[in-house]
Every structure is written in structure tokens, then in C-alpha cells.
Length: 242
Image 1 (cartoon, rainbow, N blue to C red):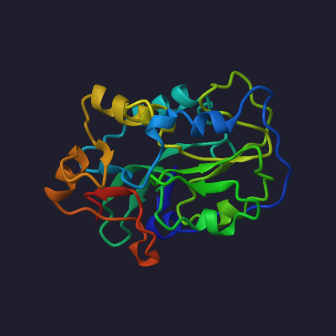
Image 2: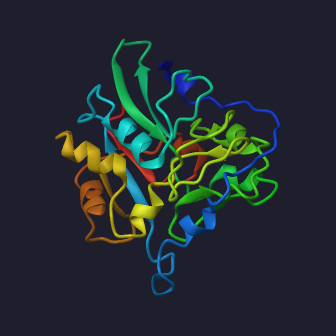
């Protein structure tokens, strides 16, 4: 997928549909993956730093997310669900090209939550933005509101689902930061795969913890939010954008 910077910063369009979730799968199970003794609080704010200078043309982060969360790698990128995707940016004036992973930015002030008519789009106290598939009506207002085109609509029946990542035809979905892993004290699958592959382009951690790896990495050099003019205070930051 190749986008100019202007296209990259554009807004998705959508229409209306009804939603359904496969029997036996409940988003609430995912949200309550932590034990009651470890309730989600605003003490933490989970975030991700992506160093585009270390990000190669590989797609191990995309493949890892697909495998972890049970969505198939897209054969039709325009319509198939993509929780994370690689995009190519080209500077029209200089011709400089760079690629980077695009996913939900887990905004502090998420526009998707503001426009959701049912409350299906919500943000946890620790900053992770999710979709409750049980009350998502598939209106796709959230997709229109997201300036990062980070959400997908499920057009077809879903099979072979992961219990920790419930999905349903007629609903909207996006990156969950692998919340089931985070609640278990693990890192997201994309970060794990990137590190394992040797790129080490992704750092995950608690933005509120001054001793965390991500805070130390952020302190080591400049980083940027996508569309900072929107003042969304994203949980995903990038380094090396030009």
C-alpha cells in the first residue's frame, strides 16, 4: 500500500450495518483479563514507540498480530480487516520514501469514542482503546472519525476465532495493543516479533513510569505523534519521521 503524506492523513468513509458476535465469545472476558486484585487504573498508561529508522520492509509485526488475534492477512486490502498494516510515505518534494506500521494510536482523547452512539468504542483507564462487539451496531462512525484509518469493518463471517480476541461480522475492530497479553504482564505480539526478528524498532511500556523502557527511549531522542495538530495525545509515538 503506497500513500502520499496527504492521503495518509486522510479520513475513512463508511455506511451502516448490523453486528453479530460468534456464540461463546465475550469481549468482557477480554476486558476483565486482569484479576480483580489488579484492576485497570490510570496509574498506568500503555504506549508504543516505533523507530522508523529501524523499521525495515519486513512485515513481521503484521504477521504476528494476525496470528495472535486470529484475523487473516488481507487478500483485499481495501476491504479486509487489518489491525495493523505497513504504509509507505513519500515526500513529494524530495522523493524520500519510508515505511512504517500503522495501527490504532490509542489516543488520550479518542474521536472514535466521542462519536460512538452506543458506547461500544471505549477507552480503558490505562489508555487502551477497545470496541465492545456486543453493542457495536456497525454504523462505522468511529471509522469516519479516526484520522489514522486504523479501524476495520468485518464484512464476512469469521471462523477460527481466538477466545482472547472476539470478532464478529458486522462489527468494527482495531488493534487492542494485545490487551490480553498486557493484562498478563506480557508485551504485544508485534513488539515481541519485531524484537525477535532483530529489528527492535518497537518499544512498549508504561508512559507514566519514568523508569520504564519506553520512557527512557523517549527521553533519548525526539519523537512525534501523527497529526499533532489534533491534540489527541496519542499513546503511539514515532521516531524518525521526516
